[in-house]
Length: 355
Image (cartoon, rainbow, N blue to C red; front, side, top):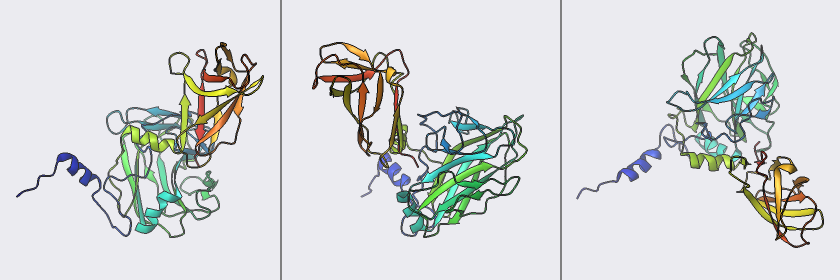
């Protein structure tokens, strides 16, 4: 008797077929440990990141001199796949860094090897000659890293001196950029057993950059093993959930009308308390929000008011926080109330648990 395997089951088998050198933890053929390597999620959309600030793609940190102009373009290496466009200041060295958590690093230690691939390009008329890729190791307290990985910038073929406790696992080399997309790989790199975190650092060290010169990034791929897998990205919903473990921005502005944000109660004549919940985060996050006047309180049977101010009423935890909304009282203490968006304003709440 012949047993027929369904196409769905075959797809699942293919997704988790092992490839490369396996020791302890394996390297599934479609595994990619860069969350959002296909840039399908872009909540924050920071287009002018300072040094040591996150930018396009939410989990990619800008490290560099000057303030580049970042944008998310849609004419990437495959169809309309997005890419990160970085327009640099004159003579400004800079690049992007991506961090792997201590949990993610354990498979790399067990395997003993890591490999990485990425698509890079420049633009005719705004050429950057070379880029470099560094695979970095952090060997201090797990998940308590120095996010600005550069201690001192060098120039023109000299690697930056890294911040304390960061070291290069590979020997970076010049990668010649052109106007066409090219896939560059760094493979078969030994992972030391004392690694507590890993990072990918891609930068340009050309000290003769003209203002508005461009470097582009797309299809970030990293996996354990001696060779890098073909680029793979999960479905958008899965990526969004994974990004959300580190960072979420709830933007109510695009919602028609006065979007309901949460419920609470009237505490006294000026203060109203809301319990603000969110999915579990990596650590207790930093919670920020738009100004109080962008929010509105609806009182139990007594109309509504724009807030005079809003703040974190309790210390945020991994699972939620209290929000204090301030305005003059309309009802009485203990009344139920709702927090909503003032439809005439940009209204957002941001929950940040990144490195």
